[in-house]
Image (tube, rainbow, N blue to C red):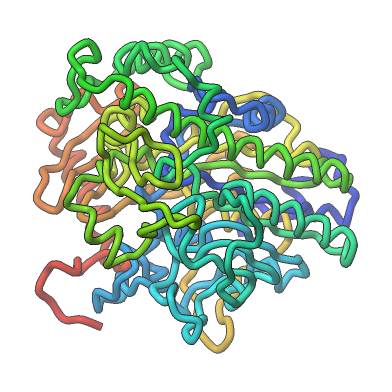
Length: 543
């Protein structure tokens, strides 16, 4: 275990409750870009998240795995996603790294902390099992993977007004009340679980996992929240990207020598864009979704204060991948309506739901099902290249805030040493004193990959070889100042100096072939060890 739980936080000299063991709250946004929230340079109104940053730490180079379900698998287990069986999506590809289901050779944070005496709760999006539509196959639902209580969705996406696979503990349920908005419900049940915990077992520390679906498509928000952003984005994506870029430099999040990447070639200059009212409305709804999530986080934090638990609760806030450039065109409609069934055909009051990014329909209400697409994802990921799916910085960079008054003395500071989702499990173990098992429920457990982020907080080296990435053939490895990255299985390796060019604008592969050779060798060895290879689209022997 990295650092040792008692020594790592007794250095602060203030931990007395429960032998120093903190509560842990892990909050995650869904498909939110690096620069969307206020404390990372965005225009979106996020006072509660900003306050966590002001009184805690912001990480400037923290990484996810570029996609919803692999990120959740990695976050929960402290392993790379392929090692947990979810290297791609929720289908069984027949290879060990691509089963679409959490494997028995891994353990979740909830399972580990529960063994150490924690109460464990979850509200929000699960999305780590292919068995998400049938109650007869619940072996990888939250209660079977260490949680005491669960409210949320087993499915990966859906309407915010009428979500598919809404679940309480182990049973599918109907909407618990009307009017219903899923982001509010996630926050409401998080507050409820905190109240119940305080009443029934206050002597226990708790772990609360809150993976919101906001701001994943569809663009669904409450009109009172959307109205807060009227005309905020009418200057257009070019101006907004430049404004964010300058704010991020002023905040110290990025360096002036890192160039702002060029506007996506598929996106016209704002002055030449069609349907400007519709385009700005897309970003207004997206912003309102994040705004509503922040309001819910505020209610969760307020309940912590009422419970007198704020001081000794370690709070994480991060995002599961970069901004999502998916445009819900006509080619999506059959999948949305019929194959995945995540889009209802009618609303609860029997009005037709019209799916797809139609410029004649303004997004926001339950009768629509749209996305904010390429131009606004390009803004969300300022100043980086590419988006969700890719291993370039726009796909894998996430904001990370850590707030823990009793255990982190620094306030409002930045940390630029690289970290990864695999480190969250290790950090939870470090501060709680929990032990990572070599066997669990009769299964041999894959050794932990991550290291405690308390090392970065206390400005110590993480002492590891490298960090690795792969999703849909998009792949990367970062070691020291170097990052080697490629798009898709057939893409050539690109090499970047992360100290001088984190926005990946100057490919150095031709100038430093020895680094390309060294790093690609590291990546290939990791890919075989971590069950990335063989890829499911290659011919080869299956498990």
